[in-house]
Every structure is written in C-alpha cells, then in structure tokens.
Length: 138
Length: 294
Image 1 (cartoon, rainbow over the protein chains, first blue to last red):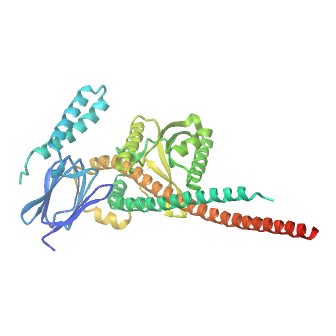
Image 2 (image 1 turned 90 degrees about the horizontal axis):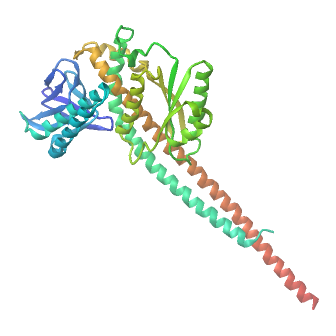
C-alpha cells in the first residue's frame, strides 16, 4: 500500500522483523528521524537506542538496538543491527547493573584504548537502561 | 581354517561399528540441516551489508584519507592467515583439504619473501599446522561452535584481528575456509579480509541506485563504522560455511563407512557360513568313515 512503508530489521543471525508500518522512528547518530512513505533515500548510522514502530496511529513495537545502520528508500526502511531486543524484554535491574559495571570498567581502564572501549560499552548500557526505564515518549 | 568363534566375534564387532557410523551419519545430517538454516538466516544481513559497502567503498577507493581497513597499510610484508578447521575429526577429507590449501598458501607467501602469522580456528588445523609452522602460530581458538555458533563468537575473533591490525601487526589478512557447495563437495576458499576488496559486490545497477542516497553523518564516517562490522560479518559467514561443510563432509564420510562396514559384514558372513559348512562336512566324513571301518 502506498501509505505504508516496509520496515525490516535484520541481525546477522536472522531476519528479526519484516512488516508494513505507517511510520518508524530510528535513532540516528545525528538525532532521531522518522521514516514515512516517500522518505528520501538515506543511509545513516544508528546510535544505541530505541526503534519505534507505528501502526494505526500508535506505537506498536519498541525495539532496542545497540547501534548499526539504516538504509532508507521511499518505499522501505531496512535497519541492520547486530543486537536487537524488544524493549519489553529488557530487565531494568540487569540494565542498571550493566551500567554500574561499565562505569567501573571505564574507571579501571589503564590506557586510552581500553578506556575508549569501556566508554563505548557504557554508552550502550546507559541507552539500554534508559530504554528499559522510560515509558514510550510518543 | 578360521575359527568359527573368532569369526562370530569379528562380525559382531563390525556390526557395532556400523551402528555407530550410521548413528553419526544421521546426527551429522540433522546438524547439517541446522547449519544450512543458520547460513540461510544470515544471508539478508550479508547481502545488504555488501550492497551498501560495495558502492561506498567504490566511491571512496583511491581517495586520500580512506580508512586503513579499506586502503590497507600500503605494504604487503606481513600476512595474517586465519585457518578455519573443525575441533573434531571423523569428517573425511574436510580438515585435510583445508590444511593442504593453507600449507600451499603459506609456502607460496614465504617463498615470495613475506612473513606469515597463523591464527588457527579449530583444534584439528592447529595440530596439523604446528608440525611445519610452529614458529608462526600466534594462537588457536577452540570450541567456536559450542553450544551454538553465535555471532558473538565470530565478533570475538574479528575483534582480535582488528586489534592486531590497529597495532600494525600485519598488513594483509586472509581467511581460509571450506565453502559449502553440497554434502559431497566443499571448496577450499581464500578470502581477503583486510584490506577490504571491493570485488563484484558493486555492480553498476547498485551504483546508479546508491548514487541518490543522502548520507548521515557522511560517507567517510559511515564507511569507518561499517568496515569493522563487516569484518565480524565476514568471519561469521566463513564460520557458518565451514560448519555446514564440516557436517556435510562428516555425513558423506560416515555414509561411506556404513556402506563399507555392510560389505565387510557380508563377506565375513559368507566366510562364516562356508566354514560352518566345511566343519559339518568334515564331521560327517569322520562319522561315515568310522562306521565303514567297523
């Protein structure tokens, strides 16, 4: 249908999701962007965050991704993410623990390289906690 | 004349061997199907990655300041060879053919005056390569596909490779694995991982289509983000192909073994029956000639 956009979420292990949706909001590195039918072609990298899928004027699904990239055409939006999980399956306590651990890792890091890696992990952990804790902003 | 009892024992032992090989064949067939499904599931990701990367790389190639993973270090002195084999044996010529291919590749590199580092994935390959190239081995990774081949496992290998590259420990990285063609045929494949080779990924069609894309943040940044991801993906793909090949090879090998055992059982049974018959005849002759003598 013309008023819908094909949304595909692909991880290396499988095709996670492939549906027709009204709109999908993707957390791009330079800010969230919504994809409606007829969006201009775009390739963007994604920061850790939540992808929101809209159907019937409501958020139908919220999926947490740990980064990846998105390919948008006027008819479709394909997100390639290495790790994807529905927000409902995230465990807040575990996420908080992961943030704690990641913070300690950053403090314990001895050289720049490990610190960089650790802070990247921290970023992911914080985004996951935020996703688990907050209700949908839409 | 062979002893009847010995023959019986022999037949029974071959029979139990046959049972084991036919069970292994069935297990391998089931695992093969799973491995193929997994490889199938990884295809959409790989295809899209390849499409985007192919045209991005083509537009960036040769441009000053392209990421090192694409442009290379400008040298080709030190080669890293990642050899993928299995942890377990009894899979026909599977490991043998990879190791043979790897050996040839390494010898060729060495005779061209390059230095080689070997990273072995899988126990079998490292055992065999260690004999000749003990000094060049930099590590062995075992138990990759346990309990299930996951992307994380591939990512771990990839990050090790990336780490080494970032520290300038090698210039070119090649992966050697068995590509799955069918259960009876696997092809030893050499794939260059670093620097990324554009290859046939970017056909003209994709180019024309991708030319209209907007990039966010920009081409260079996206490429820098994608290339490391791609290495993980390529390693994952190679591991998947290898796992399917291993099970395919094992299935064929066990099928042959089962058939051979069957033939052997037939032959032994014939010998057994002939011997039994001969014994009976002999006893009859003894009785008859005994009776005649009276």
